[in-house]
Length: 125
Image (tube, rainbow, N blue to C red):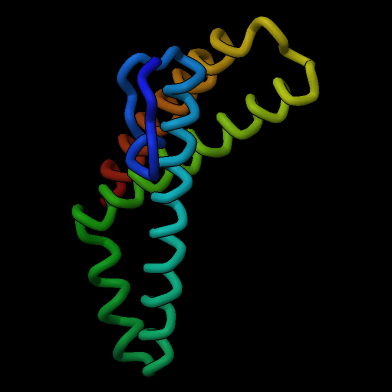
């Protein structure tokens, strides 16, 4: 058996089945959402400086780079949330034996919603 130790073993995809890969995806998306939350709070504290800070923020927030990160955030939230729902359903024994198919369907839905949102977001910008 391939022994995985430490935090780096959490993210090692070699030799894993789809359920293990889903677990890695859930960890990575959760860490990404946590990082975004930290950055979001950091930026909000900067906005307390007054109207000039707000105007500068609004100008930066409409840039294509920031909009791309917004799409990435949406993808992370969808993947993490939908995978969490799948794990809860599996934990309650509701979808036993269909976890892999549910994962594939939910991730396809996440890709579809993210793609539509990206098109709409960049269409407006």
